[in-house]
Image (cartoon, rainbow, N blue to C red; front, side, top):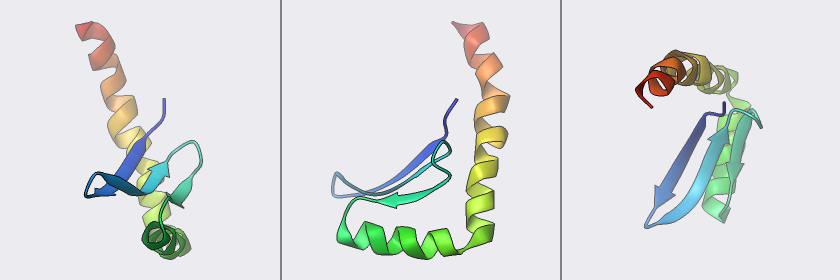
Length: 67
């Protein structure tokens, strides 16, 4: 299971957090700057990593039961 949080503007992906990578990755010049700043903040990174357990792992069994 992978948690992905993407940030878009005008249909263009700027930045993405992926739980498998464990950090933010930028895809534009602006996105790279944001990713660098967000990756410096340890509390933001740990909060995003916790989203996998808080959102994905709690809901996966519910989703499988509904299939």
